[in-house]
Length: 449
Image (cartoon, rainbow, N blue to C red; front, side, top):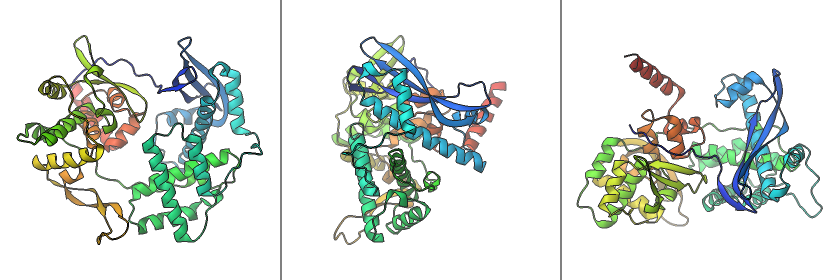
């Protein structure tokens, strides 16, 4: 267990646009004394010139009861069908409105942003102006897919853009298999059924299919905002996730890694990065950028400040003894940066040498094109494998979150890993409400002793 004195992390991601320093955030508040009312949208933003943060409100057309909103805000998973459907509807409405407002914000001079502008922007979401004669809105699914990506290209990272294009190409193959072109309005329950069947015939996992349906729904909802006809079934479309084993390295396994000796230089370098990742909880895109000048001392605490590539959040991470040991070994410097591909290869070998070989259930990337002729067909195949084979660059962040969950404040833990909510953190490490209830019970018993 450790304690650290991290500075509060602001919920603003840095970017450069005109003279605005921080990305705005859009949240929703229930501000009425009535039992049922319309939610208020709240826009938070910061302008560099006067170093002030602004908070302005505008009314929405999201009508809910005060009691339901109180439950909704906690991230509760509703079992009641009516409440569950209402939650899905609100999720969709808030996501669409947030995208609309933040997109307009990004394209508006900062000196014209005020309450009047915000109210007008929200109104235009509900009553969109007719498209200009020169603006052609595609109605086909793949045509609108390109239109949507082009609108968002300024905010998508290279990795995100790659994901969007992978799904687009899969949809192209799906259309070819079905022998038809799908319109936005065709995305309904039958489309989902056909898409699931196609993906399973191609050996894609249940969770991959579920994720891609969510991407497709996002595009269709955006099209609805632009006045394109969509299926009335769009908000209810869903493919259930399959429960999978969350692979992580325990403290005992990390000790085995630290005690390895006689490693060649390239594996020693990778092993040190793996240990650093497991004791800092960062993604490979972040920890490979660590440098000594990111470290600062606050009283008796040693912290490392990094701005995460994926989220844009700046987080303060305690520099634990296991990390300090590596820095001392390397004369105060971090290991050499290496490519993601090489890192993934090397850490498997390191874990193999550490005899982390207990067989566990997991997914292993496998080329299903066994004769190796033609196009490579890589899929994640479920099976029982030695644990070292399932180790990837992502294991550091999950190991940190899993090993320190319950040992430090959950709010601190999610700030370090960069998860937006406690619910997201729990899902990431595979904790259910039953698990957390049992842990709370044990903590209460210990507190009485």
